[in-house]
Each structure stands twice: as structure tokens, then as C-alpha cells.
Image (cartoon, helix red, strand yellow):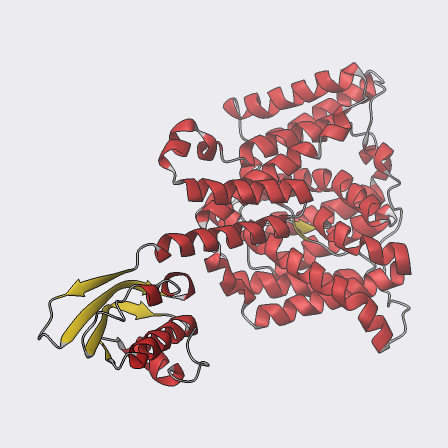
Length: 482
């Protein structure tokens, strides 16, 4: 508030985001099978609530396609009241997950998954614009090209006003002045003419109702949290700042509860609008998030007739540039791909392919993490070896095990000893290894059992404190080893 220049940036950024939110919210309402007001009111309540409660300043949360896809069957089979109950329950689940520390799981997401997440989002944002570019008058293509030219060229002259806002205003003026017959925001659906009001879902408070909505609420909660936390991490990288992921998680939950009680369809963070706010418009504070929600409500309720005249070509131009700016072009350069290990590239491509194929970011991220874990396990497993070291006497043989011992690396360990040819005493030195799981302890039990059958005594030495505690607690209690 003490910086007029910063305040102007935040205000104008909020206005641009609000304009970009309108057709998206209407489209997602159609996907969910509800009236456009349900998506628009959800976008308003999500943005305003998270402006105060969210942990990532300048991030935009609103009605999203991922949530729309999850809740669509509820609307189709049970009606709007069950949708509202689902949104409220989903928000409560998000609050509980936040309090249980779900945000800390973000550290287990590798960089290659994050890169795939960003690239997939960019592709999805671009693909979402294609329906607005097919079967349309030739003027639409000219307007999109003009809009892109304005967004690219204007910042070289001045940054006083966000280029996307200038493009939207100028193209709208051209459309109105020349009476161009091109698709506009009004064609996407009817805009509301009244404010949202508080309501309670008219559903029976029974276990049967819970059984109906709980699976959808849990899915919505997980998908919403994953998208929101991943987007928050992306904004952290763009702005070189750190956000409170736990606060963001429970803030998303509270926002969905509030949204449900105002008849909204729920939502989560929106990558496209967030990038418009942070990257294209330069916003950095909660003011832009708050104003995006307020401007959205003012525009659709108070200025609906004016907003309806905005050509979709202007918004398509903005979203195409968001897509181009979001994509990590460095990750697909030939020089980068040559240097990058194949496993890392495979993880990135898996994340992109699954996300784009399913239009579900959660599936893509989970798939990427699973592939990354398997690649890591395979790589580490091959770094474990058994070395024959100097024998202290003819009756004793010493083996040194080197590497990390877990389920992938310890399975073959049992075959690396000479049970028949070894003397009466065998020492297994684990001073250069670490025991990570029960599978390894079971393998050590199997080795000891095999030697005992030959009359050989096995001594395990060199265990570090954690490995020794794990071995002492589990050895002999795992059902015979293999």
C-alpha cells in the first residue's frame, strides 16, 4: 500500500486475471454439468478466501477442470445438493490432510517430475484453446495474431500497463466498433445477475449420503491439493520466494468449505491464471488474488453486458502466450537431452504423457513419481556388491558388503556367497553398507540359515547404529528369511 507503482501492478493484474477467469469458469461449469453461476461463484469465493488464508501470495485458485471432472458424476447421478455436500466434505478432508502434514510430501517430488508437470500444464493450456480456433471466422485468426503481437511487443515499449490487459481492451474495442461477428464471452454461457448467497445442501445426514459423496470428496481433496501444492512450488521458483505449503493446504480446504456453503463447485490452484498474474502481469502480493475475485464478481454481476462483448480471440491470445511462457523450453533442447540421463528424461516424458492423455495432473504427477522411484531403486541396486577381503586365518573367511541394502539391492545378495566352499567361520562386514528395510534383514537371515545348514557359523559385524537396531529388532522374526 505504501508503493503506488506496486499497487497499480497488483490492481491491473487482478483485473486481467478476472477477465481470463470468466470463460474458464463457465467452461468448467459445463463440464461439471451445472449452471455457469456455480463455477463463477466458486471462482470468486476461492480467490477471496485464499487471499487471506493461502500460504502462497499471488497464486490464483478458482473452479478448475480437474475438480469439474471429479464431481461431474455426482451432479449427473444425484443433483446439485449432493455436489455442494461433496465440495464441503472435500474441503474438510483437505484441512485434515494439511494438519497431518501432507505438504511435507512435496520434498519427494523430483525435479524431472516438476519439469514434466510444467510442460504438461503448458500443453493442456494450449490444447484448451483449440476449440476456440476451429470452425470460426477468419477474423478470429487475425485477432489472435494481433493479440499475440501486442503481448509480445508492448513490454518492449512500456510495462506501465499489463500487455494482456491492453490486448483484451483493444480487441474488444475493435470488435464493437467494426461490429465483427466473432465468438465472444457471452457465447460461452449466461452470466449471473445477482450475488451469491449462503445456503445449506438439502441432503439427508445419513451414512448412505456419506457413502455416496465420500469417494468423490476424497478424490477431489487429493487432486486439488496436489495441483495446488505443485503450482505453489512453481510460483516459488518463478518469484524466488518460499511459501508456506501447510498453510496453503489447509487454506485450500477452508476455501472449498466456504465455496460449498455459497453454492460453488469447488476448485484449486489454476496454473494458467496464476502465470498470467505472476509472470505476465508481475503481481507478487495477496492484493492481486483478492482483487481478481472481487473484479470477477463485479464484472459478471454488474458489468455482465459489457463483459459478454469481449471476443474470445483476445483471451485465446493471452492463454497461448501463457502456454508458451510456461513451457520449459530448455528441457527439450537437444543439448539438454544429450546431457540428461535417460532415466530423468523418461520420468519427465511419463509425467507429460500421462497428464496430457488423462487431462488429470494428479495422475501425471503420481505416475512420474512412481517411475522416478523405480529408476532410482534400479540405479542404487546395481551399486551394491559383495567383496572378498583378506582372511585372518584358514578357518575364517571375511566378506565386505558395500552399498545401500534395501528390497531391490538385497534380493540378489543371498546368491553371492560360497556356502559349500567356505570354511567353518564366515564374517560378513557391513561397515560400508546400511540396512534400510525388513527385506534386507530377511535376506541376512536367509544367508545365516543357509550357512547353518552346512555347519558354518556366521558373524555379522560393522552395523551402524540404525542398522543394528533394525537388525536386532527383526532378525529371526521374519518367517525364515526368503
